[in-house]
Structure formats: structure tokens, C-alpha cells
Length: 310
Image 1 (cartoon, rainbow, N blue to C red):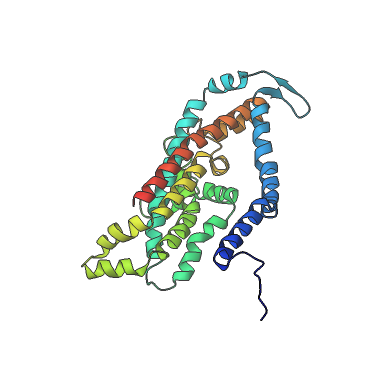
Image 2 (cartoon, helix red, strand yellow):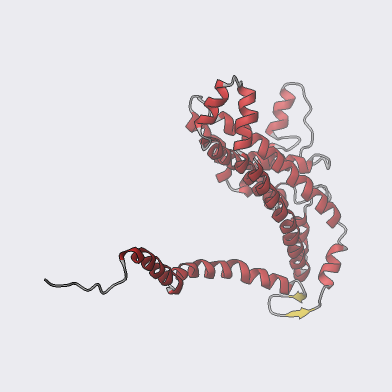
């Protein structure tokens, strides 16, 4: 009779040995790390390098061909800009107004377009269509529509006996008129985000609430609103970033006027660039970047904590 002598580890230790072998291979193999390299190169080229270059050039007086280091003089001069305070106030008003309206209207349209209504798919396309249109094109179009004498909006109001205001010529209305156009253009994206959030809510919650006798308001308050909070936080962050960085629509419609009534920080920076103060405008961009970061980072963390609590 032949005796077979085992040459490997006992059968009980083989799974542990295989696990250790896989872990060792994963630890020492450089293969997965290479997947990060293309993204890291693109991120560094398109974001990190321009960002650090902007920080450097904000400390210089520069032209296309030369630069002179001047320290913090650009920042000191930028904060002495007469229109800066008005620009900051308008920026915050614009950001809060547009983001608030996008959250409210996006939620209402999201609920409507996830209900059992006819032509639901077509209406979703109609709501989202303004997002795809050029911002400058929208600005030029609404500038013509809001013309106080020949615009279609005031013509329609005068047909029913109402004297339309100077939407873009009245200093007290210009900024909020542009904000309404911004909401019209951007609410489609907020609606799509809310549609995705509402559709992802399991039907079990609706059925349990209806069994308990919940009506439409109770369903909205106790099911839709809390369970779509991730969508709400996303819309708040995205729309607030867009509002704080707003420039193209405002410039296309009012160029910061009349006077400085609709100037925002970005338009103040652009006017400095137009005047040839490149270092000063770069310092303004750095300040705007820091302001947006200082607002959005803690807000994102706060919204994430609220999401966990719910």
C-alpha cells in the first residue's frame, strides 16, 4: 500500500493562505494605480496648474510678455474699488434669489412631472430645453423682450391695461429681472435632479403612508420632502455656486447697469480686465474663488449632516 505524503498546507489553512496571497498581490501590484494617472494629468493640467498660476499672477503686475512681483498691492487696491461693495451685495442677493427659486420651482415641477399626467415625457423635454440654449443667446433674446417701449412683455401688459415697468432700465428691478431669466433657464436642471430623487423613493413608503390615512399634503411633507433631501442638497449647492459665479447672463443683459445697480463681483473683475489691469483682475478672481470656497465647503458638509440625520 502506497502512502501519500501531503506537500501543501493543511486544508483548513488553505483559504487563509489564499486570502493572504490575494491581499499581498493587491498591495504590491502597481496595476490599479495606473488608472488614476490619466485623470490626475487632466486634473492637474486643467485645474491645479491654472489655479496656482492665478495665485502667483495675483501678486504681480503683469502683461502678456512680462510680470513684476508687487506682493499684496493688487488685493489692497481691489478692496478699495468703489463698486466692490455693491458688487458683493448684488452677488449674494442674486445667488440667494436664484438658488431659492430653483429649489422651490424644481421641487414642484419634479412632483408634477413624476405624477400620472399626460405627455409627461414631452413636458420633461420642454422644461429641460432652456438649459441647452446658449446663455448669451438667452440674454440677448430677453433683453429684446424686456425692452420698456418695444418689448413683447410690456406690449402684452399694455394690451390688458397695465403699464409695464422698465425691467432692465429701472435700477431697483434690473438685477431681479436678470435673476428671473436665470431661473427660467436653470430650473430645468433642478427639475431633472428632483425627478431622479423622487423616482428613487421606494413605493413601500407611499403605500405605508396611505394605509395610515395620509393625504397629498402628508405624503409631500413626510415622504417626498425628507426622502428627496439628497436632491435638494445637490440643487442648493449647484445653483448657489452658479449664482455666486454669475457673469455671462448679467453682462449680456445689463453689463452691470444701469449705473452699478446690477454689478456683481465677476462683472467688476471683468471691467478691471477690460481696462488693462490684469494683475488686479486676477486678484479679484482669487478673492472670488476663496469666497465661493468658504461658503460652499461648510454648506456642503452641513447639508450632508442633515441628510444623515434624516
